[in-house]
Length: 370
Image 1 (cartoon, rainbow, N blue to C red):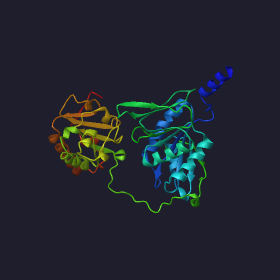
Image 2 (cartoon, rainbow, N blue to C red):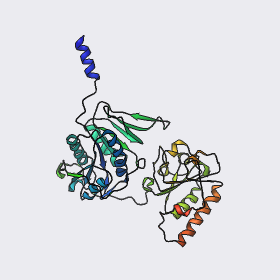
Image 3 (tube, rainbow, N blue to C red):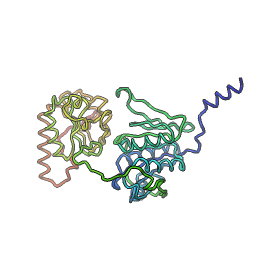
């Protein structure tokens, strides 16, 4: 009987993960340029590492990407692992995952984070399968329990976006997650910051890799809401697809792109690639116009981190005004063309870049709600 109780206690006990320490961010790059989500994750990783009293690490993989290792230090990494080889120039699952697996085995980070991009999702899934360990996908909130548990609290929308689920990985290490771009904020770049850069070797040679990259076709004209600095978004209040032409004209004048709420997308007024929100893109632009958008939670969680939010709605009690820095109550069919005309007029008077547009709306009244 005593032996049975001892066995049950052993099976229920937490494994000893004391050898695993630190937070590792896998930096995603293409053609030597890092994805913004990588620096955003370093900013969030810094907070997690501080709570755990552990180092913040980064991994940079590619060819001719040593400058990104230095940038990772400037954005907060204490130690950067750099793996450069010709066969790593273009992303392929097997060689990249082998580098990650080897480093995880040797460095033993307790948390590993990836951007929730096509590449990040593919790479994270391959690594989690081989370790094996758990993987929380598409997270929008990250936190940790303090020692001794040191558990990663990875939260994401669940049950048709009606609630947030916090997922734990108690029995395995490292704890892994992919995170949406635009959710977290990068630290200010500090070029004076010093850190350790450690060169590591590639885990596979070219002849060992089954897949070959023959060519890489860059798609032109594709909308990228997550990288946009100015977004002009419309919702159900537009009443149909035609008014999106007014928004497109304003976006063009500002040097931005057109976004939309889920209601407008579900109505078939505009494509899903324009959708901002829990089931669309999470954005962090410098300027965000919310036009004819009521302000449902599904939408606001995707744009509330914008530097400046301008709301236009005929309903003065619309929830969107609680998130707006500037609000205009009135007919969007009169206000939007007037703003567009004023922006075009001022662009002919000044030589400022199109992206510097916050000064182009001097007559808007600041909302007291935020």
